[in-house]
Image 1 (cartoon, one colour):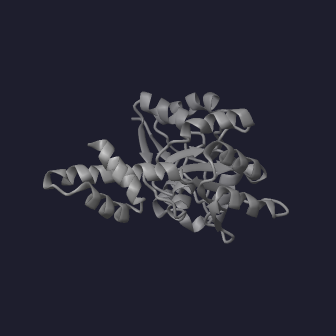
Image 2 (tube, rainbow, N blue to C red; image 1 turned 30 degrees about the vertical axis):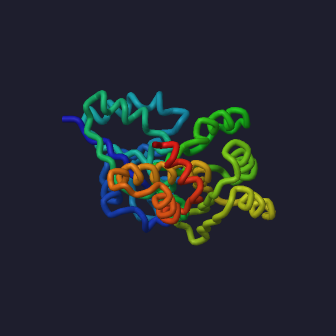
Image 3 (cartoon, rainbow, N blue to C red; image 1 turned 90 degrees about the vertical axis):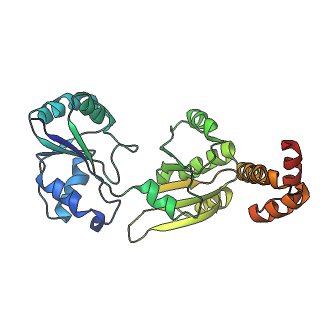
Length: 276
């Protein structure tokens, strides 16, 4: 009988965020495949746990996957962890999960810490239809090319970035996406956690004043203001179509819907006339 592959999120910073279930799994599996054995060993020591570790990262996952699959088929229970947060989200593991599915090996995904979601829900930016992008390419041209298709995404965009690249990263966001509302979530769950909120240009100016940018950043960027207005106009049209059979005049509808959706009355009225 084959074993089980566990996908185990680890704390972003505070070890107390590891769930009791995740702790039990890490304490009892036959092997932990981790992005950096030093980081995982440090976590296990703080939790007073012992386990056998093997490195599993971007540079060796193709080579290591067959051996891990063999151990799983032989009945071992193996956990996959990243340095912090949920594995596979901008971290190794997908190759192993896909191979385990093909080998009909049981996969158990454990809920737990995620920098993307932790930052998003405290950002003050609407959550609907968010897109987790993660790390962008480092080269400017490739970075701009990766951002361009996201310009009109209707929800917030979530990025990860290293401190020494933050200023240039924000400059590229402004260049491609425009000066949008954003939130920089830095060092999540640590004692020196900090959220900075404002326009991208304001955040860039604030970081530029620091002698050296430090910390690990989760960057949440709001949809463009134009996209927000377009979405609200569409909601106004949907409401108007529902009310149309009741004979409500367009001017009355425009007045009511513009107030409810925080839109210019003239814009709503023109959209209603065009929709007839």
